[in-house]
Length: 59
Image 1 (cartoon, rainbow, N blue to C red):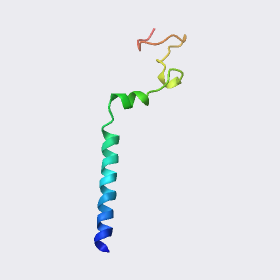
Image 2: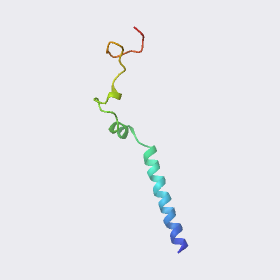
Image 3: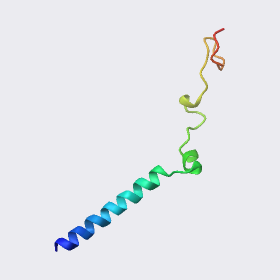
């Protein structure tokens, strides 16, 4: 019985390792799917005091 529990534990460990590997090895397509949408305010370029997109240089 202990041998079955060890085997099950090894299977669970292997499954967890595979899931972690998949998460770590996401490719460009996977990341693109998770990209922000254009209407997301965090996706907008920073704005200056007038409201125009900022280049980072003070006016």
